[in-house]
Image (tube, rainbow, N blue to C red; front, side, top):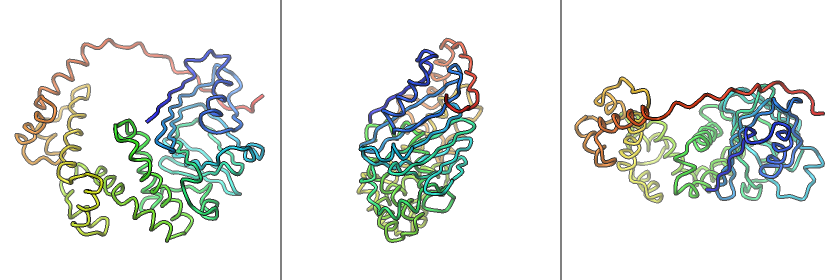
Length: 342
């Protein structure tokens, strides 16, 4: 995993507009970028992570307008697809005669081989997934049929894709872990399935879904981690497979259901015990909420995993917070409004 973080706070005010344009041009894609006319109103935080050929960027910025012009589209560079994921607020993707208005949780596809426009009237709070066209391996007809459409509705393949991508972009344990490079290929397969399903190409979607079964199973398990009814039988039923097939699929990814579930639940408890200020939840209630039937058993396996009892871990975490100096708050920049560039 290669990660780059860039922000306007580190750039002199007079140079922010050009520095931001250069960062987008060199790190993401060649586009025209309209920004607030007053340089002191220009604000952006950009984090870019590279997972094999999949690039994941997270952007928090001013209102802006992005245009990929016909001239840009004709440039001699590798064609890529972008999937934008709305975190908060609203944005609009325009391409191929369609306009998609994205709400939080929605995703939309656009293709650098043709002009497009992105509108962020109220600011940018987005994740962007950049994929070489050659890696997505879908016919141009399927790609063109899927651009500038708001996707991600619950119960659909694109909804599953959007939920997974949100978790991938926001979860440091996924994209910064030692095995993060292993996620690139199944992530591409899941994106391919979402696009194929949106383009009404069921055969293509079925192939991609078959390749991503293990990934979807783990996503399902993680989303229901605290549910007491999370069992091999319930997971297998949710994916319309037998329990035996479930075990075989997980084994190919070196996952043992019981060990994985115990480790993930322990980690969830550890995060809660590390929170500040101290939650009022008792150790027994915490253990029960995360699926441990016995508080004493939970305490034993927690200490075996982390070297301290849950109570001692909580006390140490609170003590560490008390000795930290209180940071001076930084004033929030006035992010202004968009006016046409120039």
